[in-house]
Length: 158
Image 1: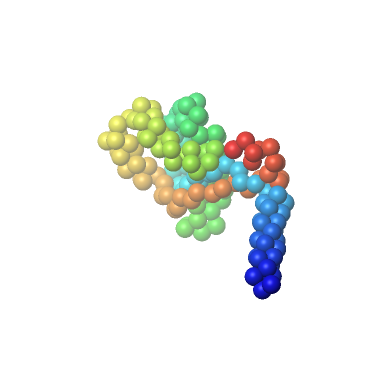
Image 2 (image 1 turned 90 degrees about the vertical axis):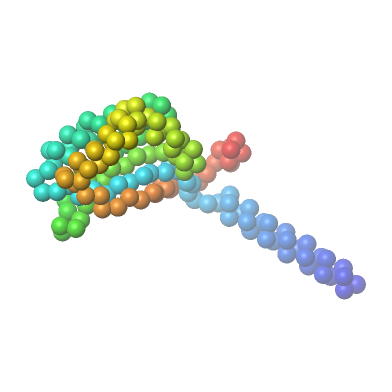
């Protein structure tokens, strides 16, 4: 008799736990979107045109090539005013389908940069040259949150 009660109680508890987890998954009011690599840049005083020349030249060429190859989805440059000398004033944003594809395509992205920008020595020289006109304040990875529930057909196909 005691064993029967424990068995029935365990089954009831398991059913409750499974039911709650399924309910939570089905009713999540948002879904994960794409992943963004975001660089926060502070352009040094008087160097706006010099840095924009770099962005419209080699940086954009590399981004367009990566987009054409399917390595990235999109890219953006966002400008803002800095309130203090320590604030960033440009945000460089690169959008990837997801974290897994971003990581899986690192070697392809490196090879593409070698082709579009140049060998490692040329790329290192570019980093040194840009350090004269801008400062990288930080780099972050961010996941876009889509404020719509995940459809059941989308999750079933993954």
